[in-house]
Length: 440
Image (cartoon, rainbow, N blue to C red; front, side, top):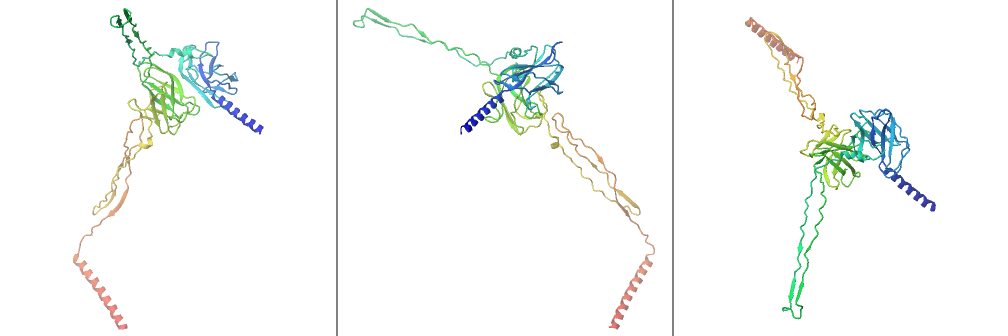
């Protein structure tokens, strides 16, 4: 019995320890693609959890499957790890994949543009923020200082506050004279100094950020890529969203994904989700501010592979399937061309056969023209353009007719011959009947 209890305790401890390790997450935190002469390019990894991760069989590679060696076998809690390489990171753009021991892609970093020795591709803030090209490196340390240049000075919306006016509470002064109060001292005066209330401290202004909208989401990315959510800042100034959150169905589904993000005035920026959140067969997308107040939300019924769901206009909350336009203005809606294809036939006229006397005629059918509306070609989300194509048919021989007219010559002779033929037939029938009667 003791052995069974001990085994159960061991299994429980193993499960707890295993779950504790799962919470740890290693991510790509900074890239330095274009080093100075004599230096090496590098990739910075960051363990953003309070657990040790065994990274013995972890790997880094680019789009061409060039490997970047990870010399370290473990990542301590909140540790920054540097991996170096030579001529792997392209200076004009590349994609770096981080894979775990099961060769599963657990993080992706994609950069573009021309990089020089001054520029790095940096995550702001560390571990879960968006990517920016900065002119300050923070090799094997927090990106906080480098990311500080992104902090804007927004125009705050101040909550109305009132400063109370001190109220004086007077204390009456009583004077009693010896003449009015028996046995009193000659003059007895009771007075007090007016007392004022201390003013309430003025609260610190609260910055309220509004006009931040869900612009586009990728719920079903290609294999090895992250889901992402794009936001739009409809303000005349840049904003920094601190500790905002993306969530799916309220009270169900995945755990809310918290993020911090900077968006320039009237611009787009996106959040890469580290874990799968949205369902491909329909889900909700909710945006919450730092006070857990819902800022924007929409619901979709399906999501195609590598097809984004984007807002159709800023005048309403309608969304549709689009070609992805991450961090850029949304594309037009994708329309299923098969639903707009129609074919219209003009009935073929029935041919008429004409006969002309005293001649042999061949009458051909009328050549009909049949038109059809070609399958619609959808361009830029516009309605289909109908094009009519004439189709000509070869003539078909429908029939051969002949009509001959006989000249009416010698009418008396013809009538006489007809009478003789009729009489002979009558006499023959009479003779046959007479013979029958004799034999009977």
